[in-house]
Amino acid sequence: MALNERTIAKPLSGGEIIEAIIVKVRDTLRRDCFLANHIAYDSYSLSGSLRVQFQKTGTAIKETTIHVRGAGGEESEQEMESVDVEVSDEPKPPNEVRVESGQGVPTLATKPSGSVEEKRVKYAIPQKGAPDKTTKKALTTK
Image: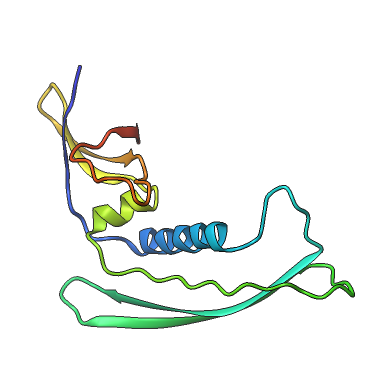
């Protein structure tokens, strides 16, 4: 029994924004950094700040700045290597943010009985540089 489905453009939740930021930072580190899964590192440290602007429905743009410092592992006499990573993103439609960060897109599904339910559908994350396609194939539903 097939369901009739239609995506809906709901505003992003705070949790969805946080997840999108984490994915963006993780992808940037994987792309621009020399950290590799097959290499062991004695220690690491980090410092940085992140400026996040957001707008709640019907309000002005707000801003928050996060300052972070951290370290892990055991220090040694060896000199630390470093890399500076830049991350930025422009405002996008909520469902585009959800797809790019691997989150489910809110979707209304009409069951054969006629009742309607909202569910989250995950789509394949678009590859950078790949041509845009007009159809999307759902990977999973929750």
